[in-house]
Length: 268
Length: 268
Image (tube, rainbow over all chains, first blue to last red; front, side, top):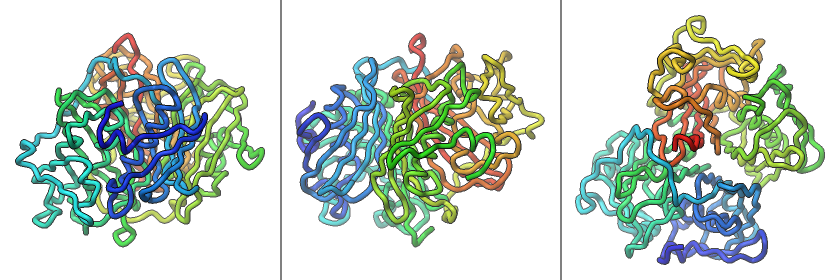
């Protein structure tokens, strides 16, 4: 495991075969509630511990209640131990209240296969200095933004006060502060760190609670900046999806995600 | 619940608070192994029974072992009972061997919200009579194709012997035989019924085992034909994703899916 602020804020302690403890650290929140990718990272550290595998391959989380700073308990169940992959589930609870449920396939991504088809490319971004750095505040931008370094494409920051693009898209650079390396668990944080795409849609800005987030990790990222793209095509039936891609400094796609979020009732 | 061949082949019997029994019916297989969407439908019937909710909203399955015809046991755990949604997990086992693990959020989709953004459209398809009907055989096309009615766009059937499009895409019409209505569980079957997109890529045709399938159900489908589109953009790192969309007869997007599959080792 890497060392650094993210690594230490996602540490888990094994209590027995299936029980773990961890702590939601203060400062990883959006308006008082812990960021979903951060919570997922805690759960996945427990899954990796329970299975003895180094990397998440595909992990799905369902978000059930907001997470507040303080101790959490994680129950893990190893469902299958295969040669190449293991499958396991986890539920993270605070005082017995479920915060998220997780199902994951984990394995070893140290030897990833070749790239046979790449119908896409990293987002084209101005250099980080020419992007908009999201600085943390006590309210908005939220405290969580102090735990990561996001530089968002100026065209995707219209929601912050100027003219919205009308395109539900957010692209930008991601890294962890202090040169902390981003491992495959850190990618889970990158996949849920950016402002919601819907902020740039031609709709009133409003928070969209995530119901579910599925992540696919394709490869361990090379050191350096990550470039991320999030897009939404369908805001229908009271729901919207947000598709994410993360590309590493060698121009390789290292992760994909899709989340399902709720359209605030006032708009649906 | 609707009645018909699909409905009866996905029936589940409650044994106690958390245990269910069902049967993998013969004929729902691909080369002897039950179709993944069919297995998922069985698991979801148990999730709906366990929670008393009518519709899957988002369900993820991880495929652990092939399913053969015969009895299966399903263990369910209700993780959260909310006002609008419930969250629950399930593991389907055959003789104690896990076939798939499932995590789902379920609810009532009878009153779906408005469509606020639709950046897409149903696939353009010739009429079903001018598409290629996939008839079942004992080998390939597999027996499963006798349980559904698929009419695939001729341009997406090049893999069957003529000239491959080189585009990893499959589009076509879906319905259940005998005018059986497709409910929201039937949509899960539609999302995993078509030939793999990779069959049309410029790669040797090979089976790609599914690791994980995530489905989002946006709305209950209107009666009539469903139009489906499956595409793949990235075959990298030994994995490929396949994204699915299902549109109903009123041109409404009713479901999305993404699956992660393994590239056969010989090609990776």
